[in-house]
Length: 424
Image 1 (tube, rainbow, N blue to C red):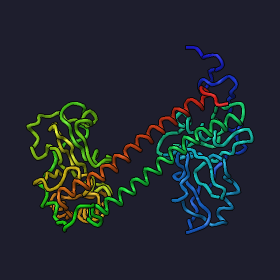
Image 2: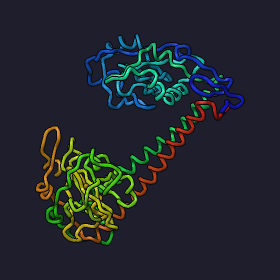
Image 3: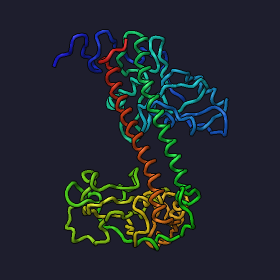
Image 4: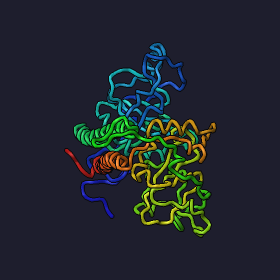
């Protein structure tokens, strides 16, 4: 297929005929980097950024260290980042990650390259362009190994396409900046909604706040009073495939962002174990409403990780390696309520207390049974779960909007940064 009229084929792809090609060294007045040493940090002073503080299109000043004015002056004489400059990580796992400098105050750098666009080049446009070309840049320049590295000379040789005028660069950057603003606003709203839900859980699930129409004392019961516990069927990740019966690996519980797994809709994505079902104990087969806890974790927060099984059709579902299955003894705990009641600060603290180990902590069926839980009436559980479920649905809807906004931005980058769509 030929190149359509008004466009030309170049080493970076098809671009408009009036766009140019240039190495970064010819569009930047300076390409340098900061210190390669690690100065002694101080409690306050000048912000000191390393590669881990430069994220995709934002700079993490909140977690950075500080250095003295004297140390900063030495570094700053070599590398003086200013507003609208571009930072690029040139070593380590985040290599080729870029961000625009959008602050007016001084800071120092380590293992981060500084690109100062010249008067013909818009910094924000250059930042978006380098972010868009990041996979290609890594492929072409990365040395590989444990510490991939770009030299300043290599960065200077990176060839980029450029619109003929600053006005067009600015228009493209402004359009992408508006897309970023929408994404950021959705991220902030989701964060706020999650915080509100977390506060609601702490209040509603402990009885500190009661819903209208409910009163009376709650019972405090141990999980051993409420559930029977059993282990899962041991199989390694290597044994799993797309054939056989659904299998719940403890690693999939750790990585899940949800506290439930809906077997029917999620059937295709659930790993399978191809064995005769008669080899699996009945207590390791997951029924609707069962709670599955992990019995091993590499961190304290993971000690209480769990999922509630939604399986009204009784699809064969095997609980796997390093899992503890909790089957309710009676209808004393509402199914939806189970998705939330183990997430309170007090319950998580009990899981951490009973977890044992150093690098990997574990919890036993006997110890889980000792954990206590405040239990309201089933009708109050249902009312609480309905409110928290609505909050989850709201957060999920916003999450879908966020995903869509990110996809739209990626599409915009592909169209605008290659000149397929012109704004001026």
